[in-house]
Image 1 (cartoon, rainbow, N blue to C red):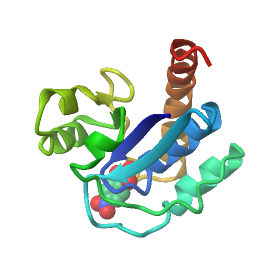
Image 2: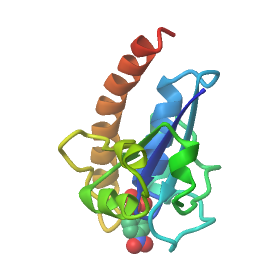
Image 3: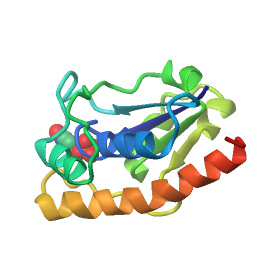
Amino acid sequence: MYKILVVCLGNICRSPLAEGILKNYLPEEHFFIDSAGTGDYHIGDPPDRRSIQIAKQNNIDISTQKARQFTKEDFSKFNLIYVMDKSNYQNVLKLSTNKEDSKKVKLILGDKEVPDPYHGDLNDFEYVYNLLDKDIKKISQKLVTEFDI
Ligand code: 4NP
């Protein structure tokens, strides 16, 4: 089983969408997908209603997800840790204790950042959804090829 964690700040807007989209593209018998936030503000909360709505419009149900905080134990539990922006990257790296851990952390869009839509409107959530979907589709195709699934 290959394990991927997606991380943002609150774990209510961006990473729940990324989790839902990854699960949509990757077969669950080979890939375990989870998400977390670097902050503790929303622990136990469902995703933001706007993320739930945009996902639903794309036939993805993320409504049962619950926010949790990233912990240093996640480094040993996951093979790959995708973050949304450079601030997430710094916050996750702060908790790493060795090179093997820090090598697992990658910006999901490569060199670009996924903007935080929290203070925006539904259009900003749609923009984030489309950015993530386009990128995750490619990532998923690569992973499936790489693992010869
Ligand atoms: P997310 O968005 O990191 O994409 O889940 C945010 C949600 C909540 C907060 C910040 C970002 N907040 O400060 O409460």
